[in-house]
Length: 518
Image (tube, rainbow, N blue to C red; front, side, top):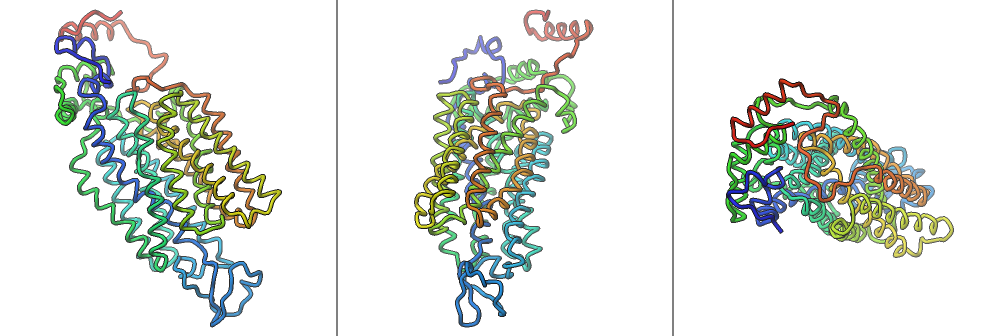
């Protein structure tokens, strides 16, 4: 429920940007509207990141002339003929089998490498040039990479296209959440990472994969269609008012808050109030805002420690989450049905995270979900070591997808904790830093999935170990639940001169700002 502000008491009661959002309605119609606009493109983003499960899969049946050969045949690579398959993937089209069997998973690794570059570029651009235009750029990269993949004439062109896809995906997936979070009050921030249709997108990909299994190119082209929604979404998106205040564009921030108040049907905030908040956050005065680089980013002790902890957590999560996702092709049953179930685990896991985050602290929620994932993955790995589960695909699938559910909930909790741990001035760069580590360590996920085709328990133990490591590290972070969002990096040890204190007090007196600072 929003706080109540009167006209006469507003200037005295408004202390930070969160109070301004409470004044213009808290969580209202505008916040629902912005969530729909920013998170709707998670559907095609889910298509993009997991489409290699279909486009890069190795068919189980091949033709050698008029003879049908199974991929599991020990003599598969010894046949002296040109092997072909009716199942359409890049493997069958470019004959990526036997000595070239590693290429498909390596291309998926290149997609993960693209996420590394996307995190670095998007974080810097969003904090320097704004959230709105950076988001547009990311969606354009996503659509370009997907279409280029679909029209690739050889494996090298396809590999470059997937690298581009990775750049766009990592940038969009964290920016859309932090962008939405900056319009929320403390009680509603966790919803930004819990309601996106990413899981539903994975489920829909399973359906599309089934209907377009005869043409991997058509599957990719169809998956690119939803990106056209950006032409409707972009004109309706306002810039983040937190970023505008931080960059001293108070007049533009006033227009955004007026837009929010109009949709929420509340009284608009005065521009004097915004100037006061900008002054309290240290964002008034000189109009030249210093652009923070990644080098300066690590000079602050507290920020450095927070970043290193979050980098470790996200790295552990990336190996677990993407490893389970790419390993799904090594589980029995129909791959299309497996993909639908995998999406269902995400669709259930994200809302679960919101309710748990509402009841528990951010750290306990994250640690609990990552530990839960490890328990189910370890259980499956141990069963596969001592029992023959080849005839029991349902048990394998159930344990694997339950672990995936906990992994999805852990992702939502980690996104909330990360967004609240970084100041507005470096929030997207912070996400970029943790995303870089997740992308680099996540490069091993497709390779672990490749090992899973030979030794099923090995990747599961690796995923569980990473998950437990991330759960342990989460307790080193500061709790952020219910706290106002930080707008600037603290500068511990900074000493104010007598002249600067006097000048600040004279400025406040001249504007009727209240008591002197001591």
